Length: 164
Image (cartoon, rainbow, N blue to C red):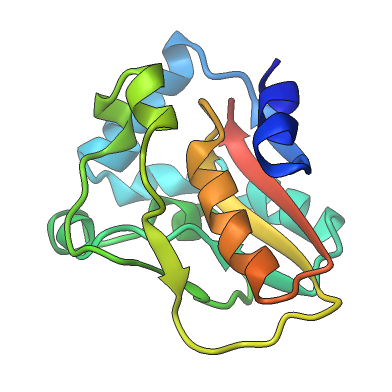
């Protein structure tokens, strides 16, 4: 259903691969790692996440950025805790703070305005890009990010999330 809705809205579908199902255990893990800032917990998924990224054979890896406020309080981007490799920080958030997606309802998430812009002028013509994020819930965040990259000419955009 999500894919059909996104295709109707954008005219294309962003292929996403979730490595695990988001369940009670994963919710507990995310609470400890992401929200309580237990950076040591990254080690649980570091190897599998990094291997999954490499299997995508992308030319450019782009993590979803965290807000400045999140960086100041947590001290890390949860996705980059799992991924051990090269990436390009091509996206930035337009605003300094934003309401966390995890605190929103499905309808509120889907109504979120575009929070991203390119970090710099870049020509991505013909490039295969992989977006990295933690959880696929509605796809709103990833589609916003993908739209920025498509505007810069990316040929193909895929996404990888730990859970969904």
